[in-house]
Amino acid sequence: MDASPIDPSAKPRKLPRRPASTLAEKWTTVDGVDVFYRESPDPPADARVMAHVHGFGLSGRYLLPTAERLADEFHTYVPDLPGFGRSGKAKGMLDIPDLAHAALRFFDDRGVDKATLVGNSMGCPVIIEFAHRYPERIDRAVLVSPAGGLYNQPLRRAIGQLSSDAPREPFKMATVAVPDYVRFGVPSTLRMFRALTQYPSLQRLLEMRIPTLVVLGQRDPLLPHAHRVDEVASQTDSHVLVVLLEGAAHAINYSHPGQLAHVIRAFMDDRPIENDPAWPGHVRLYEVHRGKHHPPAKA
Image (cartoon, rainbow, N blue to C red; front, side, top):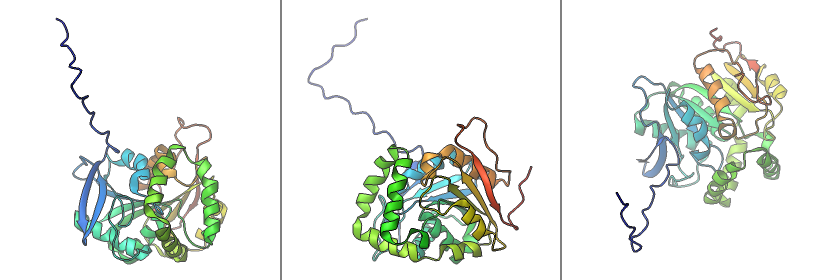
């Protein structure tokens, strides 16, 4: 049978827009602010809730590679906090406590009673503040490449650190990060940087009394060396487990999602932190510190 003739006057059929994520993209309104978020499309009924918190000036887009790998096992949320990404802006400029409160109100809106929070960079101080203010609402904390404090001051030093980090990240990371930074704007950057570097991250981290995983990139110029982290963490009777990922820089959630998802699963199930033999030779995990009161790994 002959094929039907093509009508040259017909308009070409538009292909549907490729979804930015395998997670469902949704909107809600929290305290009068439009909030954009992504969510597991069909999580198991008994799945533990896990929310991913983005970094400075960014949206949740760059967290998706890791979040998607965990979305079948955990009821996953990846919100753009107010003032970031596609979400609207709240009145006034948000600081770290404000962002922690915004995360709480997002959970209230979604009916989430308790969650594990996974953050990168600035998302880590937000999680630390959340645990400080609302300890009954957080189950565990995963802090990936925590930023802020004296090591990133002054601004010119932080800019230099970010410049050093950029060539160490996957090239595609720029296609995600640059539009987010442009949207965030210079005035917001200056105000948010001041709030981030003045926040007492280390003090609050050492006060936390929930199981906490810290994942550091061995090539991350924004963080002190892992030995310094171990030295500081050892000064307190903490619940902190520190793991070093060889070959990674700052944006581990984007550059090494398979390895990060692997270590998060092990942490959530209190299993030993072990390397997968299928990984490239330059990628390995090393346990740097295990707090005295961290749950012992189940063999």
